[in-house]
Length: 326
Image (cartoon, rainbow, N blue to C red; front, side, top):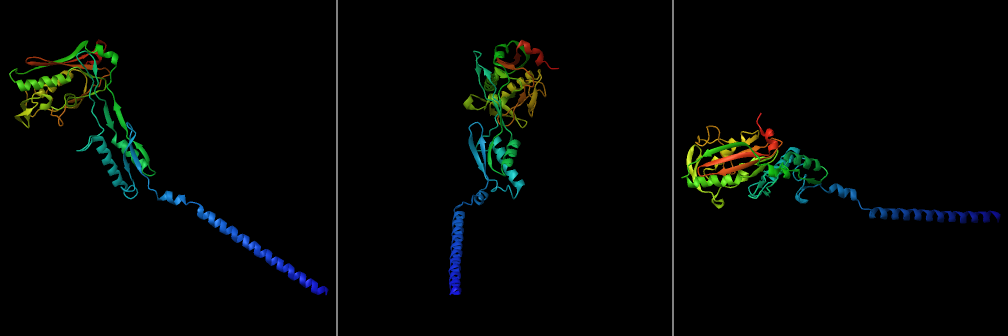
């Protein structure tokens, strides 16, 4: 009897243990299912981030607007770095210099001038887009993407407002050329171009461009047909004669220390200045340009008479010694 009771107890205990084991297994399975569900719910963001290609936005710093969006991968940043760099260099060149259908950022300085009452007529600053710097910035940003500002360098005219009333004090250089008063069309062109450069302020470090200051020589601006020299031939053209103005200016500014940027000779000798002392110009092609490499400003004065043109370079008395050639 005692043995039978012991056997019954063992069976009950074993049954109880089996039940406990089944319960533990069920609990573990439930925990695994919950964990799997939680893992499914978690977004796999790192894979999505790897799939997004970087882009570079080129920004105009003057307006904060995005000028262009570049996809480095599309243009071979990873596969052909040299071709990619050439593509970026071409874009930078077009943005700086312009194309047939759009203007570039580069802008020559339009110098300030004085009106008849001595008031300043503001021109425009010089603007330079540094192409090599822009290319470097874009390539740097191409690996990770981001915004790149255009490196625009803006230069205002180099003079002090308080100096303006003093700039007419002393004539430091002067030159006169003569013309035939009977050549009405040619003389009108000389008069108009002389008026355009009259009272122009050339500050320290400023660049003077004859074509920029005078502008287009066309009928809309009052210029007349007159003889001009082209390829060793004398032909009729609108604006003929203005080279006498640019050549007279050259002979005046050549008496002070300036740095010449661009100057051209006629294909034939001209009679109004000695041989080799001319400065021919043609709008959009040939220009007469120089830089005021002095630390002081000066003023250009042009006087048109019945048969002569005189151009003077004036400055304040305190600056005279600084405008003398060594």
